[in-house]
Amino acid sequence: AIFPQNFSSIYASREGLLGGKMKIDLCNFSGYKILPGHGKRLIRVDGKVYNFMTGKAEKSFLMRRNPRKTSWTVLYRRKHKKGTIEEVQKKRTRKHVKHLRAYQGETLESIKNKRNPEIRRQQREQAIKAAKEKAVAKKKAKQQVMQQKVSKQQTKQKPAKVFKSQKASGRR
Image 1 (cartoon, helix red, strand yellow):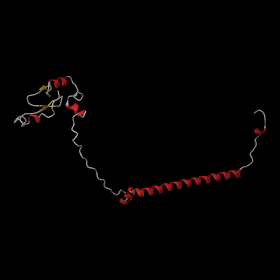
Image 2 (image 1 turned 90 degrees about the vertical axis):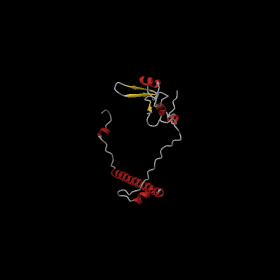
Image 3 (image 1 turned 180 degrees about the vertical axis):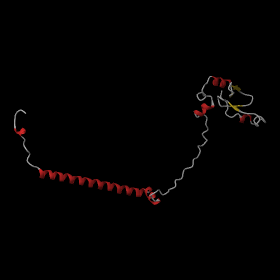
C-alpha cells in the first residue's frame, strides 16, 4: 500500500485537528506522517520511544530490516530519487568575481599584459627564437672544440713504437 506523503492537505479542512493541540508524529521505519488516532507506539526498556504507522512497519523494524533497502519507505524513495519534482531548481550560486591585484615584484600592468593573447604570442615567439639561437651557439662551440682536438692529435702523431713482443713470432 502506498501512503500519501502529505496527510495535512487531506485533513486541513477539519477544525481543531491540526490546530496545534494534536501532534503529528513520523513513523520511525517508513518515514510517513502518523495522524492522531493512527499507528502504534513502542517504548523500549531503556526508555526510547518508537512510533510506527502500520504493523508492517513495526514488524520490519523489529526484524531489523534496513528502510533504505525497503522499496515502500521514504528513505528508499529519497535514496533512489523517486517522485522528486523536477520543477525544483538548484540553488543559484553567485559567481565569484576575481579582482586583479599587483603581486610582490610585479605591477598590475605586467599581469594584464600576460593575459593579453597578442602580447603572449609575441613573448612566446621571442623565447623560442632565443632558445634556438642558444642551441645553435652551443653546437658551434662544441664543433670548434672538436676541431681543436683533432688538429692537436694530427700534429702530435709520431710513428708508432714497435715492441719486441710484436716483432717476435711464435709462442708467447
